[in-house]
Each structure stands twice: as structure tokens, then as C-alpha cells.
Image 1 (tube, rainbow over the protein chains, first blue to last red):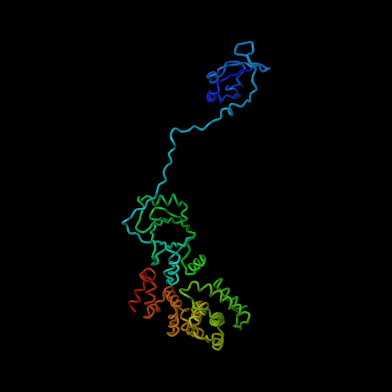
Image 2 (cartoon, chains in turn red, orange; image 1 turned 90 degrees about the vertical axis):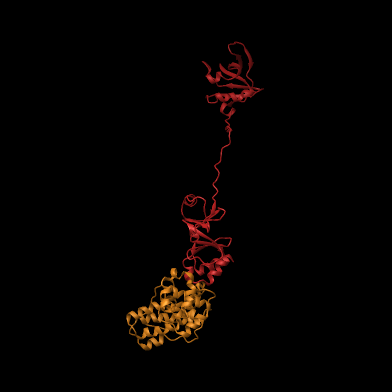
Length: 236
Length: 209
């Protein structure tokens, strides 16, 4: 004889308490939940006994159902589709009572600075850079390096800088900050350099609004007149 | 292809090999050398300020042969004055900006040979000949012999060559030239406000001049 329990369909969540017990199977029919796979003899496990069962049966080999302690069958086991309890009562990820808090990204802010810093770089247009390089003394080009962007902007580094109308930058490690600006906190410079450019293989070019872009060091080339002319030719 | 190989080695490695005795060059060799010089010119002109003068094949070919034979004559010391005059002729054309720059493609290497010749036999015929040439082609001899006034004036009249000449004076820190009244303002203009950085003692000797 095999023991079975019958529960009301709305009590399905209570089966979660016995979900961990091995061998249990369940099925649903006509608003009732059927549970089988219980030990044939002996006391049922405590979680099983705690289920809100509406009926307990013993099942014989012919599929006849006997009410507990009765010798006369009261029904036949209906044709059911049995499922392992782990499938019948699948797990659901609980919803947290409070939504998780996402740490806000820190917005880098630059503030006007009263500290005068020597210019180390400038950002100009390719046309202005070409016009300068066409006639500049070689001694003024030699200390410089430059990189051009696809948008036709040119970053020129070195000293002395060429006398061009441009945005000038001062250098703090591998960070280039617009002239007249500094970080709102002095410690931000080394921290940002570590966080944003751990490999130290690029310059970080900051705008006054705090946004920045990477300029890989490998993209900087010596400022020879031929390099400038060939760069201009590559844009034509 | 003696001359072509000579020029190729010079441009590629900076070292040269010359045969034991000066020999005339074959026409095909000269044609191949001219082609190589034209390619060299097209590349070199990109580093010249402003617009470079045109390529003048006659001057370029004369200069590369002059350089080759100077190397031979610096090594084969038993060649006499007649051999030097025969193999190191004057340039027969006019020394225009185009000729100056085209010849400079090879003559710029001549100062090193001049130093070598001075070391071997001070004031001998070859050295005298080279010093004369140096005065005629000042663009190629910055840092060495003083320039002939007329040829230097031609040079200074051309924006590209004037710029290159001043660049070389600064590069070689040629005090003798930089202190000349007609050159000092050009050098000063090129250095701008950064003379102390780019040529630290520039003001010292220009003020004393």
C-alpha cells in the first residue's frame, strides 16, 4: 500500500515546505492537489504532517483508494499526470522589499583655479596647425609632438608651444586640464589617473565641463613638417 | 650602377663604398641615379618650409658625382692636382634656388668629407678645392666655411631656402653665421622669445658682435 495526500488547489504554495524531501510527486486535477511518494510505513516526516491535507488515502496495486484506517475503498485513483515536486512547485526569486541602491557615478567637476600653471599642450584645428607648420622654424617644431583626431582637431604637446589661437592645457601626470581650471579636490588627479589610465599608456584630455577623452601615447608623433603635411594629405 | 649604389647606400645606411680609382659613370647609371634623386627630392621637400624650389636634374647629378669623387680623392691620396680639377669641376649652370636645393641633396654630406680631408692633409689641394666649393654652396655648409655673399643672397631671397638656412644655422649653432648683421635678425626671429631655451648663449655672442 502506498500513502497519498490530497490538498486543495489554493494550498499549492504550502508544498514548498516539503519540496526538499526526496521522491515526492504531485499532480493537479479537479481543484485538488495529489501528493504521492510518501513513505509506505511509519510516521510521516513533520513537514508532511504539517501540510493542510483535506484527505489521506492508501493506494493498493489496483489503484483503489482507501481512507486512512478503512478496509473498504472509497474511490479509484484518477488518471493523473505526475510531476516531481521540484517541477510542480518551481522556485521563484523573491522580490526584495526595497529596491537595490545603485551607487551614483561620480561626476568629475573642474573649477576655476587661481593657480597659474605652465602650458603643456594645446588643442587646435588641423588647418591652423598646418598653416603654422608650413613656415615655422624647425627649432620650434622639434620639441613638439602631435596627434590628429578624425574630426580634424589636433593636440600639440611640448614646450615652447606654438603661438596659435587654441585651447591651452596644463599637465598633471598624464592628465591634461584646460588652462585656468583644476579639479575641485586636489586628490582627484592621482585618483583619476589610477582609475582611468591604469596602464599609463594614454593622456586624458579634460574639457572644462569635466568630460574627458583618451589620447593614446602611441598616436603622438614628432612634429616634423613632413608629418604635418602627410597628416593633412590623409584627410584630403 | 656604381653611382646609383653609392647613393642608395648613402641614403639607406649613411655609409658609402667607393672604388679605388675614379672611373666615369655609364649613361644608364646616371639615369638611374637621377631617378633616385628625384624620389629623394620628393621626400625631402616635405620637410622644407614653404614651397620648395623645383628639382634641377643637372645640379643634382653634378653634386652627387662631386660627392662620389671627393670620397675617392679623400681615400686615394696619390691623385694629383690635375685629377682633382678633372673630377671636381665647377657647376656650369647658374646657381639658382632650384640648383642650390637640388645640389644640396648630396652636398649636405660633403662637410663630413671636408673634415676627413682636413685630418689627412691640412691645406692640401683637395681641401682648398672643397673649401672653395663650400663658399659657393652655403646651404650645404652651415657650421663650416663662410658663405660667398652673392650665392648667400640668392639663398636668402627664396623663402623656403631662407627658412632652411636659418634652421640649419640654429641646428648647428653656427655662431659665425648667426652673428652676421644680415643673419642675426633672421635667427632672432626664428628663436622668438625662446632663445634662452633653444640657443642658450645666443644673446651672449650676438651682443658682443
